[in-house]
Length: 242
Ligand code: ATP
Image 1: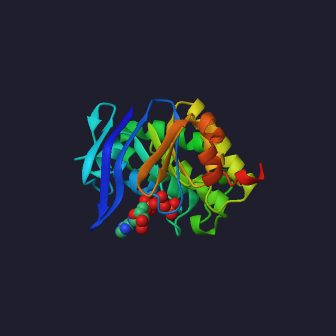
Image 2 (image 1 turned 45 degrees about the vertical axis):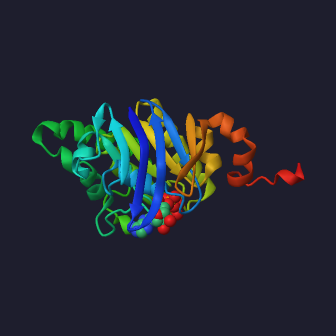
Image 3 (image 1 turned 135 degrees about the vertical axis):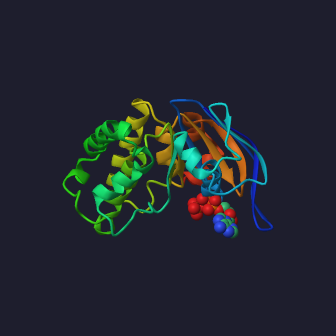
């Protein structure tokens, strides 16, 4: 579904990504794990067309994305849920969800949009009682749920999730992870960016480890969970104690 080949990106004179190659098949959860500043968000922003690469290719279902405007990429079904959620704070929960479906506002789509609205509320019942509440007054966990819900309102084929667990209590993280697995089961393909490597590897099929703009390791998530380098650098296990 998604094929990235030899992708590089610069911010001014500084190279942020070096020859990244990554593939994702339909129906997979692929995790991209790495420390602060490794280049994870940069990669998502390249896929979404928010920034442009200095080299390389991004192909989605056979279509080259490099020269497409971000709104065209959204139309293809690539939807990013950004780090920090970036909700419209003064707007209500309902309005934020409606804005997720902004590009589907044609009359013919209205029925489908209202079905998706019901689906999101069923997925996140906590939002149902808060439809008229301003997004900025929600708790962190509720805001993350709203951000994912808003993404789902755009009818994603490929959902790009940037650090959905960031700053959330463990129980809420668990809730979000359960939802991500459910979305996969219901047919959404997900590229999951996480610093919480353990959580990401537990629910993903495959993963890539990114370090200072380069892919260092890749493989099945279950194998990476057992990989000594990954354990040491990302899973907080001190191997000397073993
Ligand atoms: P985090 O988990 O902290 O968000 P990340 O892995 O998503 O980190 P990026 O945000 O992609 O990392 O940043 C990769 C590198 O590019 C960093 O060195 C960062 O300082 C740099 N960078 C990111 N955005 C810009 C920008 N707009 N201008 C200049 N440099 C940038």
